[in-house]
Length: 215
Image (tube, rainbow, N blue to C red; front, side, top):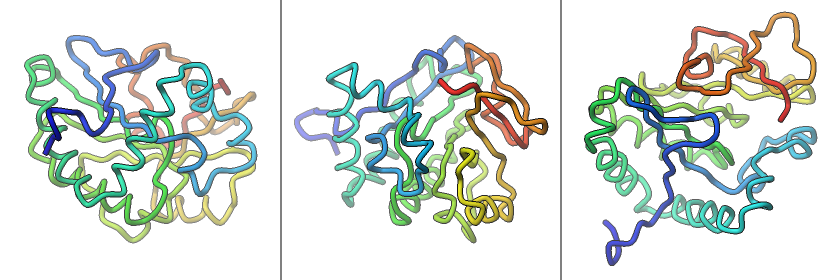
């Protein structure tokens, strides 16, 4: 599946908050910010933290664009299934209590066909017992009336200018909600953790509404 032993995609293993340790490992998949986010709002675009990395680090945007272009191909699903299995088979990952695959630290599900590809990938990775896929999305329409595999935690990401129609769709699906705010709404649980490996509030459906400070 690899061409001349070259990696066709970029999967990272952590960031400032997703800090791997002996019990928790990460895989992170990113796309370019904004251009892959069809349901972004005005406030989301203005406050998008993912854009900052593309401006500060010259290697980030080309890597995300490489992922984006490859995700459109027919090879994407089999390649990702093979790559995820290869990483998960490494001793450190195999012995970890949890592996969390964060889909879209940057970017989003840009169309229904792409969302369906991820459902195929997750279904094909059910045999990895310690692996859980996590995604925050505004593209909830692409998952409506669709069965989601048990190894997938989907959380609806909103802003104060999110279309109520979209919120209604997410509510009907029973999705937990995530938002970034300056002032905490009364019915939200505040997440101020510095390390997601020790908190995990955002990784489960146990918390219906989670908020972080705008950053």
